[in-house]
Image 1 (tube, rainbow, N blue to C red):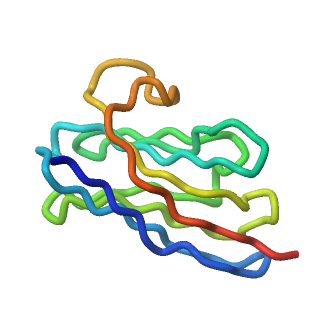
Image 2 (cartoon, rainbow, N blue to C red):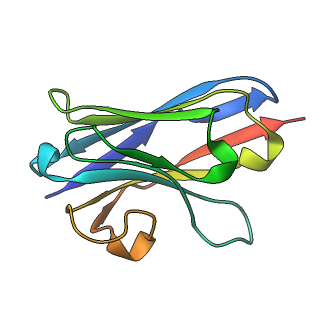
Length: 124
């Protein structure tokens, strides 16, 4: 049974930082590209960042470039999202997801497995 479990969310003031983690089990982690998505109330789920199987390629939503960094540790079956200079508009539930190597990594429909999400709230 595949499980993706996010952690690290919380309440932070604008300008602050949070580090999200996503621990994977039940799959060969190094075979999967990993992504982070977010969903704010009343909005559709939005791509945030993705990292390739070996970690050599990353891609970000324009509005988070230079502020967020995605990374992974295949020995620990974990993907991270370091979020700096947080803004109120970053407030959302953040989800990690896993996909095989093919397909567009910015599209939610390409991802096979999803975590339950972790809430990030940025106060102004």
